[in-house]
Length: 273
Image 1 (spheres, one colour):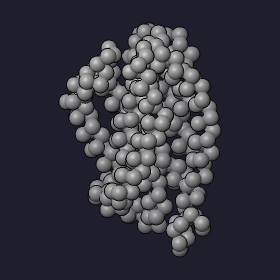
Image 2 (image 1 turned 180 degrees about the horizontal axis):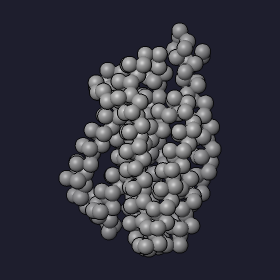
Image 3 (image 1 turned 90 degrees about the horizontal axis):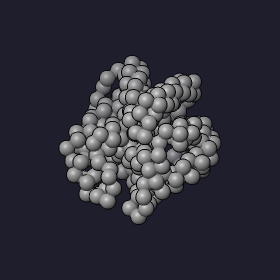
Image 4 (image 1 turned 30 degrees about the horizontal axis):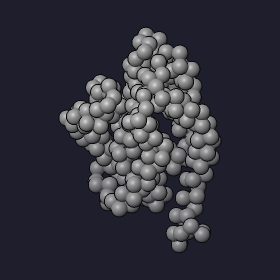
């Protein structure tokens, strides 16, 4: 989230307003792909980890199965977007010069790989391992910044820098997340629905879609009525509110695992205890 603020001066220096507006649409789209790929396994893993934490074997199967599911589902999304992405984009963005290849497909890749890394981040929070959580995100953040700045310098007035930088960071972060997870749990796969219910994930997935819509759907609505340069100006204004999100999300993430753990230790699983 901090990269949204720190990279703003470089976006302003190297990208025309309309190009920055296109970038904001691509990043919003990649976040939508991320939400779909995760299918709320970040939330369900957050909860069920505490439920199975005293049963190491079951816990390892749960964690391994979730990440293997993310890999498989992400691969399906990549293949489906490669086959159907272009005609869908032509239909939706008919009024804009916004083609699916290459940047729409790159955005899909960013979303898929970011999803794996995000679930790993939730797992580290649940395990209350703040040092690994911090440094893994710092390294990912640094890769985004360095590759983006170099890309903007080499290819000004182009999305190669900002989207290419995020794709590189997302792929490397996802590979690390998978390696670190499977090194600890081994590779086991049983349907993740054995440990969580489809309806639980479906309801929280619906909430995640609503959360995405409340934060990013406005860019798409504006794009249908106003030029992409206006989308860029609007996105810049919204980025100025990111520090508030940083503080609130940081505070929430710091104590939520403890709350869930204490609730699971109670005989009655409800909010009052």
